[in-house]
Length: 227
Image 1 (cartoon, rainbow, N blue to C red):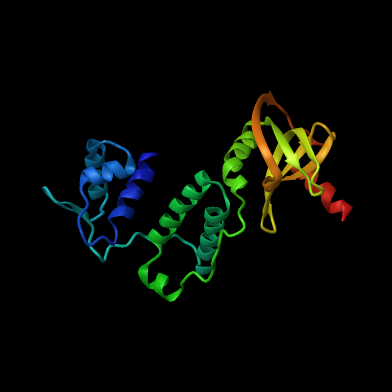
Image 2 (cartoon, rainbow, N blue to C red; image 1 turned 30 degrees about the vertical axis):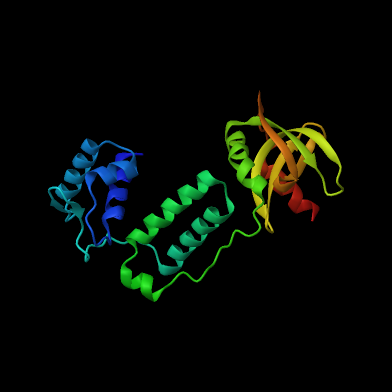
């Protein structure tokens, strides 16, 4: 975690607390040493954050303290919150944790009166997320980023089983189902593989490259012209 993010997290943890929090608790939460926390607290105080420190008790922020709001409209903030909540509910655990931190940061900079007057009107349930998604999503995402070929065992809509080597290009969420858009080495063409139909998945040591006629933009163009 970078220092700037850690300082923000410290302020977020202190905001709205009725009881003081110790340097030890902060260090355990942020996974750094107590010495680092002492330095960070001092840096925040020097920058104008009114942190109250009491020896043997801990640190506290006044209830009236608010972070400067970002230059976003209410609708823009709701768009950010909605997107983060979708990632939180529908993605893998790693991205879900990142989305949770993003939501905490957004909420931390929204003044209290705005939070009260403009409650989040959206509910994003995770009822339809298949267990395979949690198991495979992070691996697929890493393979896309690293251009690794994946080996999968797959059962199609007609209950036919097959093994495929695929070049994953993108993960798409369509109507309650996560799907891999990939170039299938068996069929020598683009194919779509629903994650909930994948039986096994393994990252190979083989890498692939994209080209003008083999990439996600080209796939989308093909789909658009065929409709």
